[in-house]
Length: 90
Image 1 (cartoon, rainbow, N blue to C red):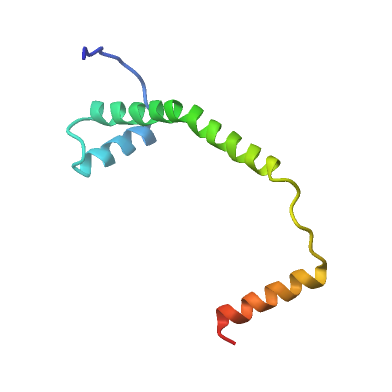
Image 2: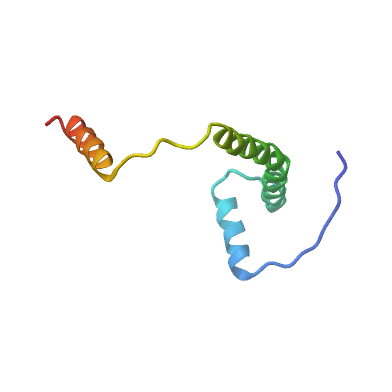
């Protein structure tokens, strides 16, 4: 893989963050940090469409399952009370 030299400007806060990352010993130089950040960001875009497809499939599955059961207020309160008592060991 070829390398391309770039020049860019950072704020003092960003520069301090880079130096802090270097101090951890996880990186050999600042370029490694920048490349790692770019790689992470690129992976977000690569995974994005698959995640969107999974979300759409889950939404469609919910729509296809039909309406949810409806409960009266009293039924819901009784169920919550029963769960609470089971969890508390009452």
